[in-house]
Structures are given as structure tokens and as C-alpha cells.
Length: 65
Image (tube, rainbow, N blue to C red; front, side, top):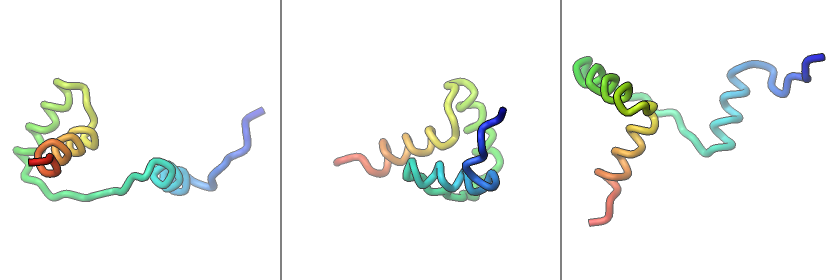
């Protein structure tokens, strides 16, 4: 017997996940060559795009000087 659905649809499930983890969706417009290089880097390091961008922001923009 399958368990009862907690959320009516996938959008509600994702919204609940984001709220639970304090995540916010951000959209970026980047040049294609930069995205290709980023994708290659992510495959090499086995990271997600979110982790790469978060690490860059923390280490390069929000670092203490």
C-alpha cells in the first residue's frame, strides 16, 4: 500500500523543500561560453551549479577584508 501524498503536486513539494531549507531561487543571464565553461568545471569537480555559485559568492564577494 503506497503512503498518502503529503503534497498535492510537485510545485507544492518543491516550495516546501525550499522553505524548510531557507532556499531562494535566483535567475541569471550569462554568456553561453561562460555557461559551457561552468558546466565543464561542474563535471570535473562533481558539484551542482548552486554549490558552485554559493561558494563563489561567499569566497569572493562576501569575504572579510
